[in-house]
Amino acid sequence: MLQFFPHPGEVNEPLTDPLINTHQNPFDPIVGQDQAIALLQGAITTNRIAPAYLFAGPVGVGKRLIARCFVSAMLSHRFPTSNSLKEQLQLYNHPDLLWVEPTYLHQGNLITATQANTQKLEFNKPPQIRIEQVREVSQFLSRRPLKAPRSLVVIEQADTLADSAANALLKTLEEPGSGTLIITASSTHSLLPTIVSRCTFIPFRSLERGDTKRVLQQTGNEEILADNTLLELSLGSPGKAIAAFNQLNHIPQDLRRALTELPLTTRKALELAYFIDKTLDTQTQLWLVDYLQQYYWELHHQPSIIQHLENARNYIRERSQSRLVWEVTLVGEECMPL
Image 1: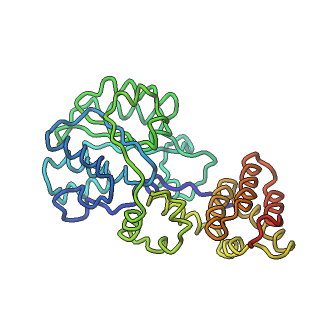
Image 2 (image 1 turned 180 degrees about the vertical axis):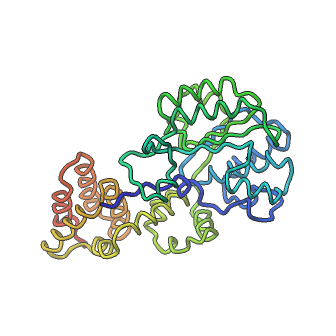
Image 3 (image 1 turned 135 degrees about the vertical axis):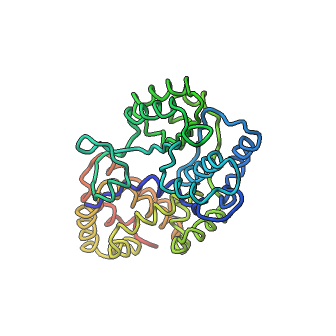
């Protein structure tokens, strides 16, 4: 079966790298997020850097990229960033920077999603921030910086904090030392209120349609612009659009074509149901329902089709036999094109 766990960077870093250009200001390449940029630039200009920041907003709208811009500005003391610093930041190996991502536990070792993809490993559960990683954060912030005026830590996707890790992070925030901690999350509601209250809040918003298209063009993802369904599903998130495009391409082309035409015979419907059941894992099937709902709503604007697919989603979530669910869905006359 196909399993797809997108690397966090694929979703959260859709924009171009600000550290490989000659812009005087590392925030210049950013599209949208004017409020977040204004708040961070103000902190840099006045040299009033908070002990902790919370970047909260939808996935895929530039939180990781802007975190890198902010880190670049704080470590360089000036604009533009030096070439040596650019190289260190690109490799995340600056001695005063610790970048923390959700991890899987594999044979007693913690590995990131990137490492898992490289090693072609598959896991049934999504990665998370673990207590061992938070302990490393605490130790890192407690030491004196080697080159920069302060130590910097970025924790991505803090929504994935394990309970023990969240409690440990709270203790770290209570005694931050002279370093600065940047936390990213999709929502403040996904974190302990006590963690949120100890951070300076930096809001991130979904992008306008024009800005979303501009980002996709700048990052070489023009193909996505031809699929309006993907753009609608992205909800103003270039990262989501890219992840959805990758997800769609994990589904065999023949299957995609057949599903967007819908079966005209019972035999064809049964064949497709069998193929879906044998080829796609549960999460991919649920994503496929989302895609088909949007696709057929744009095509027919028929609520009955959407409801038919919604019923399929509910049954799949309830762990019903997916082959039977798809047979009923694809054969049902409510789902036939008008």
